[in-house]
Length: 302
Ligand SMILES: [Zn+2]
Image 1 (cartoon, rainbow, N blue to C red):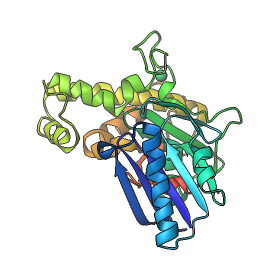
Image 2: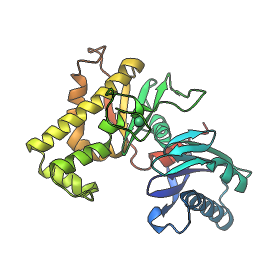
Image 3: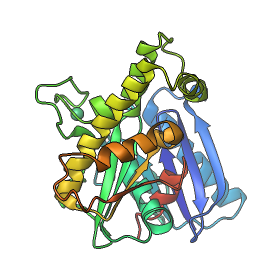
Image 4: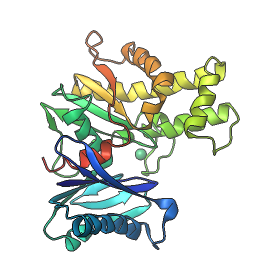
């Protein structure tokens, strides 16, 4: 059996995933209940304790462990993750030491989610396609001729850090004018809160309800218009270069489908910057929710 691990900003999820991509067993550990001294220990403990329990107490045979983590991943190491606040964490090696008989692989979480969409979700019928994860930051992956584009030197496809505004807003990566400083869900939510004078703590379903209740207000419309324009700029750049058949949008954006998706489709389709205006690829929503990373991390082995 394969185990998929999803490491997020708020929790570590460990799941047993069958060959149909179904999670048949799951264990989640939340950062709010953290007792370990460091984030690294919290993550390792969260994974190792579950694997030992399943192996020894439930006799589950685990052959492969795929780990999806946010940030820059190289050779099974989390080189840096701003969201997790960790650097140079050799997570693959640590897990491998404890379970020498299992295969262990680590990949960027947005790329894991993309693998799940490609195999079983919205991208399954396409050879040339792009997955974009619009959340706190922006991540993604691209497939060409059915295969994930994986450069040899490093993982690549850091779409969130393509520059869309020269000398623009400062980004956590050290650059300026990065796509995710303008088109991430974090940015949109911040803008809405400012425009509607809401507290920083207003988030999730509460924030969405407030937006829906004020959807016709000039301020909210302005914010939505501006936001989808920025998403469309990045999409247009990627489409002009890669010419995918379809682009799939996932991450926190999915929860805002009724608020943002139609407007985005219209803005993108009418973008004057599209090179082949008459042949614009379709935009689709991701079909897996929060489970995409966990399910997809078991596909790193294929
Ligand atoms: Zn950046």
